[in-house]
Image (cartoon, rainbow, N blue to C red):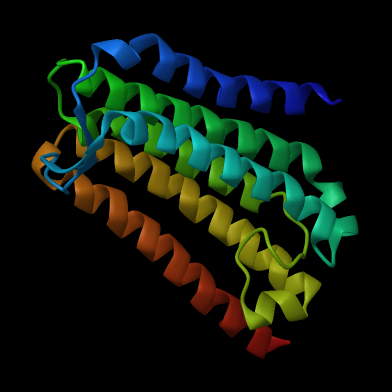
Length: 209
């Protein structure tokens, strides 16, 4: 078993361990959803609220591990598999961090959840950018448009640009820490723009071929 798989499973296990350690100290109904301003607007029964998130993470991890096996262009995925594995680890670390924040909030530690998530989102966006720059053409990972899927050169040029844009988005996200009232805008707008520009760019350079 690859060391990366062991690390992935360890991160998922920590989700369950953290939930079990604090379970008895949590209220019967736990906060499970926050609005864009960081206010709680959803609750779940304690058991569901504490263990649903780890279970969903297990499902997502299963899908992420299955992708390199079932993708029709899996030979291409093998060429950047170390970068893909690194991204999955960053994603799982993000999920663990988010879960720990939720547990801490429900233990009565008051803080703005979105503000504490901003650095984690920045790291996640940067990891997306790094992965984009290393991907090869495939059907499930990356900026998949009819134009990138159809041409290796279009794929490569689109993902080089997309990778840089997501890294810039990661830096812009951090500005939300200094303007907490607009944190959600600093989170969403750079992400949406990075995606939209990448899609349009893929069409433009495909037309040039």
